[in-house]
Amino acid sequence: MHIPELPLVLKKIGIDQDGDARLSLSEFLDFVQSCIMSELPEPFVAEIRKAHAAAAAAAPDGAVDRRAAAALLASLGIAISSPAVREELMEVMDADGSGDASAEEVITCIGMMRRTQLDLEAVARAFSSAAGENMALLSATRLSEFLGLSVADANDLIFLADMDRFEDKDDMALTANKATIDMEELHNVIMHWA
Image 1: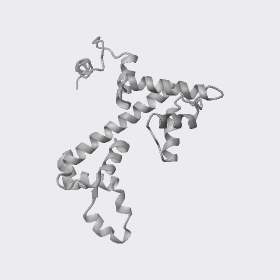
Image 2: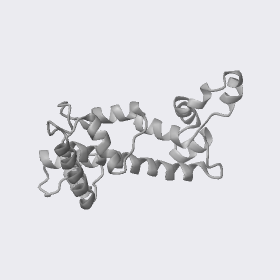
Image 3: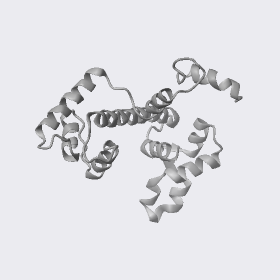
């Protein structure tokens, strides 16, 4: 791409919102935000703010700590059963490291969770399309056809993604000949290696 074409591309894809052929900090931040989080419906944002205000009012110091933030999410119908996942989520939510979650941090976190959910749904649709009749597993041959990779590259990708190969050590030769990945493994490799 030639540099003179870049402003047209930025405008066409909606990053250059004011069409001035320059990318302001605000436009850049809006673009980054759209990549990592999904917009939430205004009524739901209002519900989050109301629930956050109630949680803050109930706290002795007026702060929504990690435990209260997890309870706040649960009150909104977002239950996180794994303690490890909940702790990791709280680390992400407490963006400023203050130990408490502001309403904006909670809204951002939920928007990021929604973006991940939408991405997973898109991967599931793509996986179903690529897997064909065998909806559960994707072989290197089908993956190479779907992504336009060489079979060798698809095999390498499957090798990186296929966690099931570690489950039955007595059957390693058979597993190597029938290497496949499921939808969750494909999602993991896309999210972690992209």
